[in-house]
Image 1 (cartoon, rainbow, N blue to C red):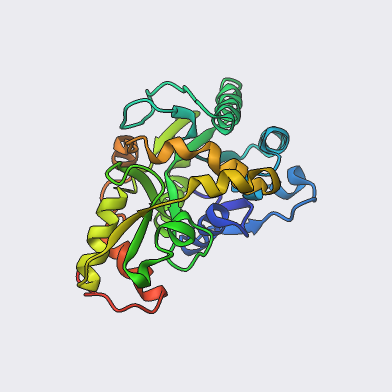
Image 2: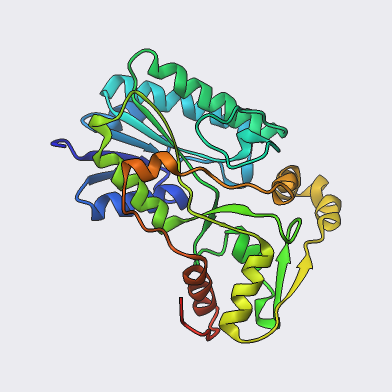
Length: 297
């Protein structure tokens, strides 16, 4: 495509940062939006707006996400830019997976309702000619990012041979390496002119359970790894005084709900895309913690 100018919102965050880096590597001219400035003015001349804005720690989602959505759609309408926004799995509730484009939205948590309403607004905008891509992925994975659920909880005790499960140890869970997800954004951005107005695209990423994780860690460290359970009771005690604790508790069901993301549409659009494997992800996390693994994938 001739116009390869992109405005990335939230480029200092997880998704936005990964998208900005990958777009720049793919030859895009990337502008990083400064919070509090005129978004429509910042989007002028851009072919693509990547919305990586996400209130930290789930703060005030019910108010802030609709406000962000309004601003993004207004900037897109004024500039003529397409919009790419990350989707998550909150909208699906506890339905059997894999979850894909045709899976109905049946959220069971407040944050799922907020996200479903947000996605509905983006879809509605496509009826007036706005082009939107919802790129749906699981929980983020990044070895050197201390804020991921893997680093904060599941691998926190790995030096002592312990993986912590937040739910059923054998329940498969959807994950997405941030580097892979950034490359997915860049790959879809290059195809934007040929895409229809409304796109709901699943990024399969990785699917693994706490038991799978423990087995792979044990294989690479050549030692037995035990699986412990996260103390949700402690989170409940702290919830009245800790906003993030309250919000995380609402999403507990996801760790007991076996699920995966259907990546059929993405594979069709980007054939040959290779995402990181669980052995690669584990090796990177062990290295980041100064632990020497087997080093074989």
